[in-house]
Length: 290
Image: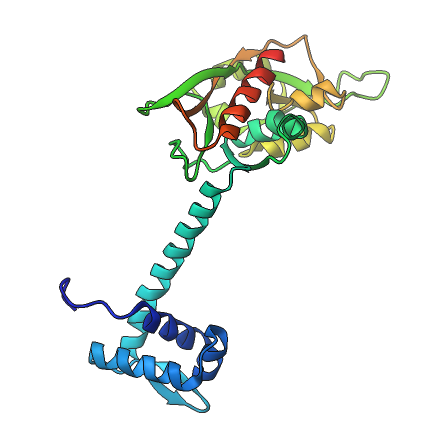
């Protein structure tokens, strides 16, 4: 079919997709609130236009021909993309939804403990919290507010410093009396050990400690620290709630390492809804009050 060939009716394609997915004209008709003869007529017209049979009879149902399988692959992907687009529009039109994308450790340690306060300050707010690492742009459809380790180089964007972070040594409160063996083991991230910035710091100040476990996800590292498995090198932001409520304690005998500051971004000027700007301002205020 050339690019100039007339596209089949969308109604015909919906009928075809339902029949192919369900393997039966009658069930497709029920799903689309049509008669079986209407589905049969639509598919016959579609086959006539394409010049290819799309189904063959199999018992009381139907199965796809090779041409039918090829068409279903394209139609299925197109319908999925259309549904995603409609969902994005629905999100965009709902003034109570605000999408905030940030690194998982920040969502876990800093943002999550402040969501209740955020919703109290903005009644009706339904935040969408995402830790999607592939999100790098504020586009007002998928992302309203973005928290990143570097300011975004995106035109039409307001980007402001939000939080400072540091790598700190922490552990769960040990039983008394404190045993020197309690902090004899180290829990850390694999990415920190191989980092040009963090790796030398760990080797210099923690190299004498036996490594108990190495993780590739900071949330697992936090969980291990809370379980009292040893001394953990954690982002101060990830550990902030546990430090504040006493589930973890800072080991002041060990030095800390300053990490990259975090930035918060939104569309410059008028936002998709006033609530987006309100949430942005509230997050800035919470950070300044910490």
